[in-house]
Length: 228
Image (cartoon, helix red, strand yellow):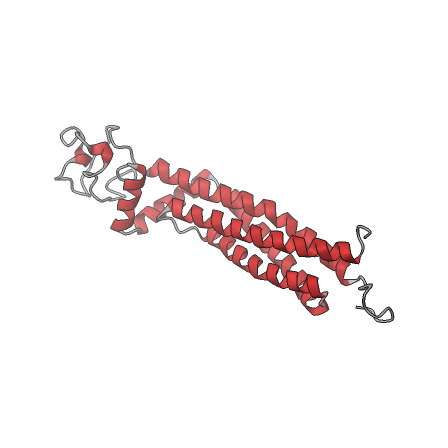
């Protein structure tokens, strides 16, 4: 078997689609983990990468069948859709990596304001933090049950059982605000998702190139007078 011949191209394309299936699982897993880590932050860009991962999984199945059967129609649609998926995934990955500190702060502020009390309580319990930043602008659930409040009911206002969400409070460092933790979680979500998406998007160009070459090759086992 000569590398670059029909059999080599067929096996390479089939193997590449098996890789795409695994890559799709990685993209979905990393993106889903990023959304879970963020807890209350609805990250539409991360959701876009999850969608592209699911789509890549379906395309990988089509590509594998087309490669094994040397099916011209399947290979044509596979090639076109894979290139469009590359453009979409590349754009989303770049957008994730381009999110700056100011935008992360905006996402965190909006998420805290829109979240339910149950979600805010989950954030406080996860990071052992109390409130967001300004208690007037960003009300929050009681922190009295947090580990950081243990034994400090009389020294930190937010740890008091009589705490009122709209009181003007000054944090004294016993229970830190959740702002920095949420911004870090958002940064992790965007950077991990964007990095993985950008890295694997370039493998899709390789798939397009192999498919173009493979479609224009003759199957040596077929009728020599027919061009597949």
